[in-house]
Image (cartoon, rainbow, N blue to C red; front, side, top):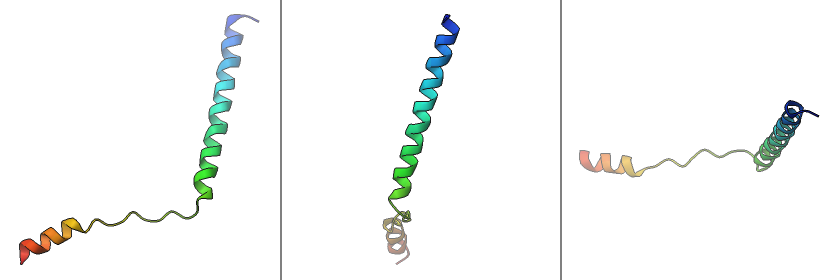
Length: 53
């Protein structure tokens, strides 16, 4: 095999490995269940209320 075919095979193998890793990560994140919303930071609201009072 010449150099360009070797590079093509290596590039294809890397692409397949990356795609399998991506699918595994997505499956793991999906397995964790429904995502919960981030907690609301109330410290800024408390400071704003204190300024009004």
